[in-house]
Amino acid sequence: MKRWPPRIFWVSAWSFWLWLGIGLQRELPRNLGRVVCKLPLGPGETVKDFVRFGPSVVTKQHDSSIGKDVFRRRSARTGEVELTISVQRPVAENWIDFASCWVGYIVGNEDTRYLDGLTPATRGYVIDPATGEVRLYNLRTGERRDYSDLGSLVGVHWERPWMLFVRFKLGEGNERVTVLDAETGKRVFEFPIPAGAFQRNWLPRFVGDNVALSFVEGDERCRLEIRSTTDGTLVGTIRDLGSFWSSTADGKVAQTHHSNSSVRVEVHDARTEELLLADETPAPQSVDGSFYVPAFSRDGRYFLSPPTGALFDLAASARIWKAAPHERASLLVSPGRFEIVEDWMIGWRSWSTIVRTHVIRNLADRSFVCRTWNSIASPVDESRTMIIVDDSIRRLPPRVSWPLLALCQAILALPPVLLWAGLRWRGKSKS
Image 1 (cartoon, rainbow, N blue to C red):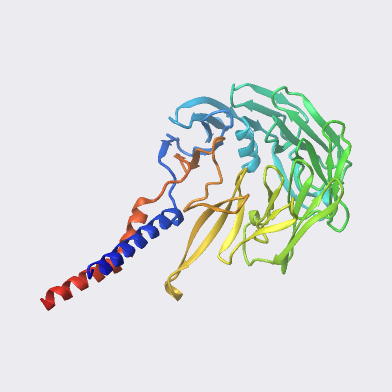
Image 2 (image 1 turned 90 degrees about the vertical axis):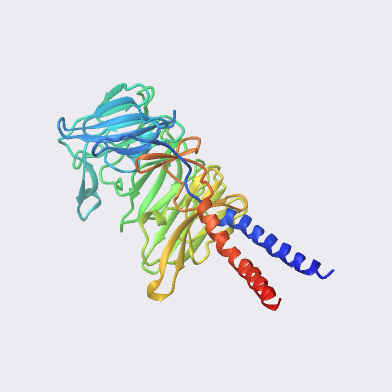
């Protein structure tokens, strides 16, 4: 009988150690999956994005010998070139460039320049009148189509092959918004804008199948109008639009108003102008612009507010999650999940450092999915099984870091091992 208490103690100790290992396997940061392909990129060639219609990526390289940008569609599995397109005067390096590649097109656009005037008519991005037409290249077939008098690409529809262009030239009074169907080449929607009324710092966007336009209302205030692409009728309105905003297909609009002291996020129904919810928090010390951009889930039920660090259920008009002091709400990474950035202070005083990790949680119940060293939000393929990292394609979902888990388990095993060694040495000393 004297042997049973020690045996129970050691079985319990190592069972607890095993239970900790299972918990660490769930909680420790994971690494991205294996390398699918290391792309054989040339000098100055960079990866833009995946294309939606297949396991392919788009790369861009500037060829100074011919003064053009060369786009290549490469296989995401082998890196082989599937299609090559040379483009003169491509669209500027911004999110629209990536979005147009994702939906399968490259836009050789008219050049724009920025005016820093004091009035709405002399401030914002304008077309350089010395440039020519718009060229649209199909990344599936390589086909090229030319268009005149379209203006600059400012938006891409995520479900339809629609592209949104805005045309404005100072003093000409022909400001206009156009929706182009890239597959058929037809103009789906055109809406003239009175000269000087258009607010160029808030560019038009798609709101579902409608188009949102912004207009100056004195004292730098901005009014948002949502227009039907069928007949141009007014669908909804938001007055006093904030600096950063997003929307759902059914007309819910989230906007951010920020000052030196506070950040306020509001969600309105543009069709009725009803305020659905509001949340306010003290302004952070220093963040990038993406921190202020609110986001909706694909079905429009959930709303993530990075500025106030909260997740809301709009169906219940309730806050269902709040970020901890070391957390920052980041963005939605899939139809049913969102990402959080964690900053961990490790060390003491001058020997301390900050380690950053990313956590994925489910929207429905906020349950923990995994923790990673890198964000897995983008750029990913349509099936969310591959992600671009520098010049490589890696597998998703992230994999357990077995070396890190083994190290942690070895450290946790030290106390029972040392205790066993000490007891054994003591027993031998007595004998």
